[in-house]
Structures are given as structure tokens and as C-alpha cells.
Image (cartoon, rainbow, N blue to C red):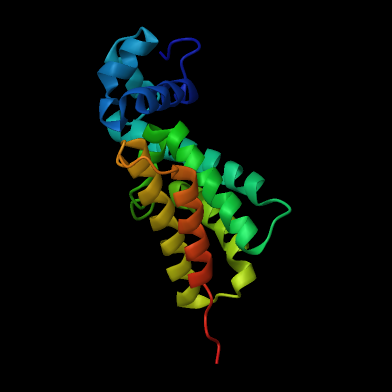
Length: 188
């Protein structure tokens, strides 16, 4: 019988906190059970093992990221919207590195719920990219470029990968401005 007050949301929420504080690799059934004051087997009433924990974290993070990006994009367009959503994305990665790490892999085939959560993030980014009138493969290339640029910069920053004492915010702003300039597609 499931323990009172212990449900999937609480289990995944605790796992997400551990991931952010200690890294995604620290998320184990034993570690989450310890944090919740229960025995590891009792977690199986709420999640499908470690994979279920990581999947739950990915769902949570994708939902949070979609909200953060949507809020950043509201009332903006073009390069301003791109810059604002990129900054919001970067901030999310820096504030929630473990949760974000769970979103890196593409969903498994048939995992419609996780695919929909990821699609919500992409839908916000597609809205931001509308200013460039991109279609088909051009839009996909732009989405990949955006995600790669922001992911790469933010994960390097979170890992302490920038040792040269030059303003990180200025470097990031320049990166996104260069990305915006590169999104122009010749429709001739």
C-alpha cells in the first residue's frame, strides 16, 4: 500500500532536487528513498525504477522550461525575442542543471507524453523563429542551432568551463546575436 503523502509528484520532485544539487548521476532509488525517509522498494509504487525517476525529471523540466521560455518571449519578436528566450533558457540550465540534463536525450519511441513535453518547448521556439519566416528543413536547422548554441554555452558555464576573465553575459549576448544574423535565409 502506498505511503500517505508519498506520490509520484513528491518522489520526482525530490529526485529533481537531488539532480540539481548533486547531478543527475546522483539520482538513484536509494538516494531518493533516503531523502524521503522510506525504503527503496516503496518507490516502485510511484515510479518505474531509476529510468522512471529520470523520465519524470525530464517531464518536469520540459514543462518548466516551456513556461519559462513562453514568459520570456511574450511581447517580443525577432532578435529581441531570440535574445530573451536564449537568456531564459540559459538561466534555467544554470539554476536547474540536473533537471535540464534529464531533457538532453530524445524521448524513446512511443513515449508520447515525453515527446509532447519536448514539443511544447519547441513550439515556443518556433514562435520566436517566425520572424525569420523559416520553413521545413530551414526551421529544423534553426531550432537545432539555437538549442546547440544555448545548451553548449550554458552547460560549459555551469561546469566552470570558461576560465578567461571576460564578461560571460557579453559573450552570450554576442553568441545569440550572431545566431540571429545567421538565421537570414536567402529566399531567391
